[in-house]
Image 1 (cartoon, rainbow, N blue to C red):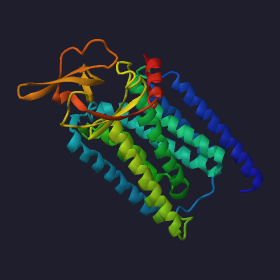
Image 2 (cartoon, rainbow, N blue to C red; image 1 turned 90 degrees about the vertical axis):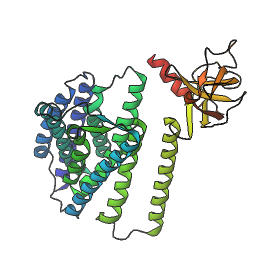
Image 3 (tube, helix red, strand yellow; image 1 turned 180 degrees about the vertical axis):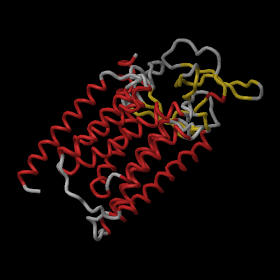
Image 4 (cartoon, rainbow, N blue to C red; image 1 turned 45 degrees about the horizontal axis):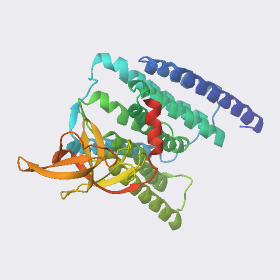
Length: 375
């Protein structure tokens, strides 16, 4: 392809990318139960039109079939990991049953969107420029978010945070992987992987009740593991991988894994240690509003300890002022340091999440600001 034709090709591709991005933005302003169908039509139109408008040289993809097999294995491992976690977390009956009706309502439009997205990605990344890479990333992440965002209420803080973390962050992680793979190994391995890891929820009658933070963790870290494997074994641009680069990759992967694991363990409050943002001034002077407290499960709680406990579906941080016994089980009477009176009733041992170890000043301020905006 001559230089003049390359410039024309680049202009056409940039124009298409901007038009597609604007189409997604317009679609985002009219989110409804029909967004999934509208999105599949938009993606279908562009996936049909782009191959005729953007010219691409034929690329002999290296290790095409081996990468395809590897992605099938990774997809199966993903499902195995997900359902293994379900043994610990439990299962629930899938809300959307596999039926002829739901094939048309969910499986067909989602399949069209996934296949069309990968056709678009594969054609537009031929430009191999930073601008095109950025635009393609924005487009593909936008498509992922729009495909599922209608099931969440963005006016509710918890749903907004799920969209931000579970959809946007995890989508960004997976699409960075797909952007790396598509120009090197083609669209087919990605399509196969995406269809398996996406459509299973509409086919298998039970779904693991895995905590949303753990699902986010898996979706963020798993693409990185796939990248390390694919890049080290099948990358056509890498003839010899230097030992120092491999060590850096391994150190980065381990550090990221440890950090995300600790973070998920803390914010989930389902393990030995936990962390929460203090949302009131009932413990002021000792613990201020907006501080983050880290606590630990403890069987030995005495008068004077500051504990985290659940009451009326809320997590409360107050001090123990009296320990008593009822039905051969300890119960705790609590009070906020800044409150004039003690709390109503008592706290059962089962409701105690842990004893506060230390606080981190001001770390929870952004979370409180978000809560106020959504209240």
